[in-house]
Length: 311
Image (tube, rainbow, N blue to C red):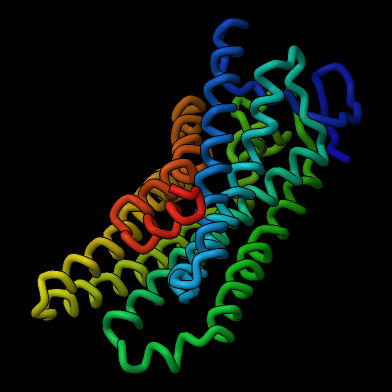
């Protein structure tokens, strides 16, 4: 249970107030409608990719199996924040329970970490397929692909328990208002009774080097892919490789660009409104755009989606 202290007394509280987006009641209703539509479109888009891969035999390859799992991840990633945000738009109190806050914190960051690992594995898959095509079938077997997928989930969910447990045991002072639409470490640490530079350092250490190492791995993989593609004599082969890898790079740029802006430095360095906008970008907008990006220039995925929708 969190300890919450005021200047006049000390008491135990059971929750925080997620301030979210401050605007009049009419604006809250408009945002509810807008984000409800975005949430439904995100669910439909990512579920369509999962179903297309499941029912189209041509898509039963490691690249599309990884993509289907990535879409499954995106569904849960957006679900970790948007439903509660929608409820808050219509709520007068905007209260989230203490346990609910830290559960959201854990799942949001665990799913985000899992996404980083998935993007790295997808880059590795493209590197093997394009730079080592003769070895690709023997290396990227179904068993190895399954192990990579399981590893992404396990590593992602083992990354954040320690700092979350530490923060949950701290005492919180002043108004219990979190100026955000989700339970983020920056606003939470701002409510603690004593400054916690060590905790901020631990979170930065968990975030920054991991993000940078995985990003360097991804960029290195695609640099080698680009080098190999430029040597391909066939214009059609080059176009197909560029289309596939281009989609991956756009997704990587959208996700990593916003995440590095947000967590590449101390979590308390950003203004509240900047935190909300940047977090909204990678937690809501990116999962919405991913199905479009991956299917826009991928003919196999287009055909799979057309087959699924019966068009």
